[in-house]
Amino acid sequence: MPRFAANLSMMFTEAPFLDRFDAAAKAGFTAVEFLFPYDHPAEAIGERLHRNGLTQALFNLPPGNWDAGEKGFAARPDKFDELKQSLTTALPYARATGVKRLHLMSGLADRHDPKALAAFRKSVTYAAEFFAPHGIDVVLEPLNMRNVPGYFLNDFGFARDQIVDLGIPNLKLQFDLYHCQILHGDVTMRLREMMPVIGHIQIASIPSRNEPDTEELNYAFLFEELDRLGYAGFVGCEYNPRGKTEDGLGWFKPYAGVKS
Image (cartoon, rainbow, N blue to C red; front, side, top):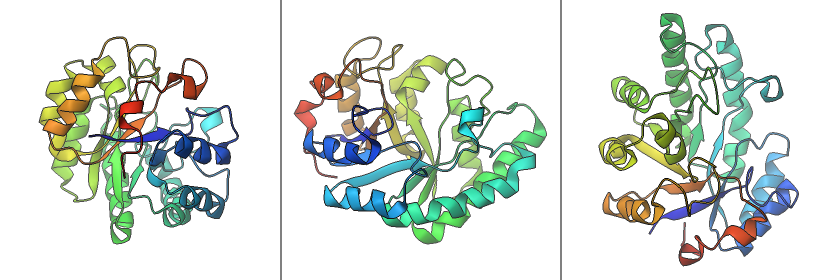
């Protein structure tokens, strides 16, 4: 049975960020994820997490100036020093939460630019080697061009090929079914093909990015497929609730309380 992690950047937003840990645990989640923790002290996040008996499934490494449109800088040749600093910034949060996987964002760049590709491979290698002694995986997530125009990592096959080619044990694929369906379709077959390199999965309805209970994908089938494939990782609920978060959790009730 899948182990679901509530995404606290998108769910339970009726409450202040630190109170969302309490709300997620009350709703039956045993794990959480979020985009960025850096506006809050690492110790405060760790305290809320552990007080509620929650597992930290994932969070993102610093993306640069998010409000100015930066979406990471792994593929930016001029941003390698900032990338190295971002890893140092994230490390205290990783220690405080006990997280075992961190998402490295590639940033806005042309995937066919040799300089961008070289920068990406250099950054990915450096990040994975930096976190390996801490027992942390680095995950790479392709994003669709409708939501994030100009994003470097915009193809699942390309991402898989880079991971396989680099051959770094703690480098994995973050497989968001929402982005995969928009980019490529054929989600089930891609899950089957790419499962050996998948380190984290995320879900949302398509095309609305709401609760995973309607629209294009049959999530009941896909959850069973994850069991058939032997996926033992987390499934992050990275969706925008249609209304109050708790009112849209009918899809989750059969899975509530599954231990992390």
